[in-house]
Length: 194
Image (cartoon, rainbow, N blue to C red):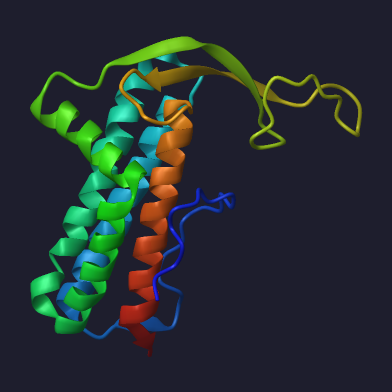
């Protein structure tokens, strides 16, 4: 049974690689999954750029996160023809992704970036995010040790054609969390203890 991937993840732990003491049974599958992990890390860097305080990095960061996020699934597809069990496993995830409105929308965004003129996006001002309390925005807080908490001014960017009422960076965060679950599932299922 596949995990419930329709809900956004609230746990924003950094992505991890295959745990020490494990390796993949099939070297071609290992290459596909490890490359997917590298692409996911690149997409995460894109999201970090999109959330940076440097406005010159916002749009390119969004594009990097979207395009490299989609490339994660392309990399995983490379392992399909190498291992029947991997192919069956990935087909289950493909079916889930096709049913997920966010995943379909993110694929349309990638197509618009790579093959068209880019997604229509607009900046809707900025928000203050407190670095010491992830996800806390727009609230003035005093640190328990005195003084103010560290804060960053970040953009609020929305895609004009988005069916979701959420900023682009939140939409991409949930997208990358979904992809992280797929890669972690591949690492769990297709690696074995040494």
